[in-house]
Amino acid sequence: MTKEKNESQRICVSSNGEISRLLEIMKRLRDPKDGCPWDIEQTYETIAPYTIEEAYEVSDAIDQGNWHELEGELGDLLLQVIYFTQIGSEDGHFSFESVVKNVSDKMIRRHPHVFGDKKQYKSSDQQIRDWEKIKEQERSKNTPSKTLDGIAGNLPALTYATKLQKRAARVGFDWPDISGVTDKISEEIDELNEARNELSLDAQEEEYGDLMFVMVNFARHLKIDPEKALRGANKKFKKRFEQVEKELALIGKTPNQSDLSEMDNLWNIVKQKENNR
Image (cartoon, rainbow, N blue to C red; front, side, top):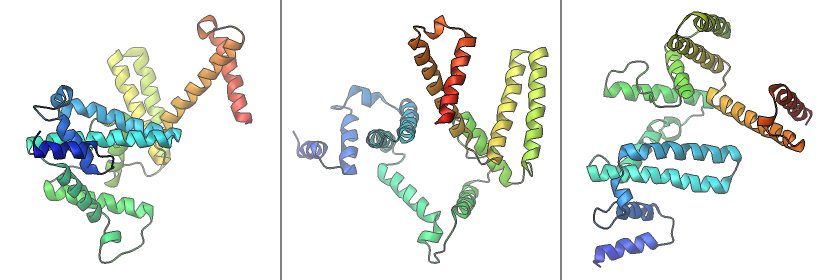
């Protein structure tokens, strides 16, 4: 074994938590001669879905308050970054070091009130507004940008809609108060009902999408994160339905052996118990 491989082996098996160890492990996994066949085959495109999945698993661990699980999931998410930077280094596009330098420079540039010569107190709301202004200045320096440029199109649909609406609102394209939104909701419901009775499935889908979009606008005016709100509703539904199943099991039944009337009654009982706690 060469001196270089000996040093690589020493770093990989070290018990410390330095980032250099993880970088070296990934380099070894991607080695064309001695690496792992699966890891060698991976590309930006094949790794991207895992990155999205790991980000959701981080979020789930936080929602559950499982800090031990969060530690592991953060490691898995970090691994995705290491994967991309190793591939980028091999292709000559960027490296882990250049990525770290880029984000470090960005954080300093976007926090002049902390790192600048004239430090000043800012509220969280003021910092968000200034952050967006700095981002806009950065975009305009590169190429003349349109208002909605730079929003990732593969975000979850509710999040994407929220970002589109916030960006449009910054240039004045927004209802002045929430009454305009509620009026629009009523209008979209009427149009969906009309489409349901008279138009094709594609037309119904389009009208339903319009209703969902304006409901996101409603959430934005209420300062509610629609993605978070829907996740909460999903969680609540799952919890209640599982409790309905438990209640049915106590009388020797499954949902398939029950009917809507019975399950709806049990649902209301479960809901009442929650409200009485």
